[in-house]
Image (cartoon, rainbow, N blue to C red; front, side, top):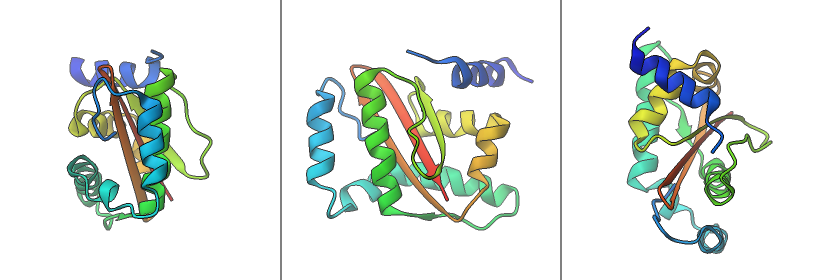
Amino acid sequence: MSLIRKSLIVALTLTVTGVAVTGARSAEMAERVERNSKNLDWLVKHPTIQKLLELHNQERARVGLSPSKLNAEMCLAAQKHAVWMAETGWFSHSGLPYRENIFMGVTTPEDATNGWIWSPAHHGNMLSGTEVGFGYMVLNGRYCWCSVMQ
């Protein structure tokens, strides 16, 4: 196993320390998320969310699975959790009724997705279900990623 791969697995496992809004207050972002939760195009069409979906489905195709469909409500749930992690600094699962992958610290959709791929449990989540939602948040330099599957 390469050093980079080991480092990402360790970071994914041991880190305890979205719509990128560096320096913005998370409470303001949470309010924006709630206010705009009726029409979710702003979230599901965001380039970073689309990139996460593309990478997720590339991995599913690599192992012979059909693509997951992006679910707007699941994206909203994932986005709210990413905002919460960024605001609190807590690296914790949400308790949502979905299988969930979270990551804190890496700065690109590629790194978050690769971290999930290299972790057997998280990779299993990626390969399960037919619907997926993604969220991410950057606050004061802290990157938080969340994906949910069903």
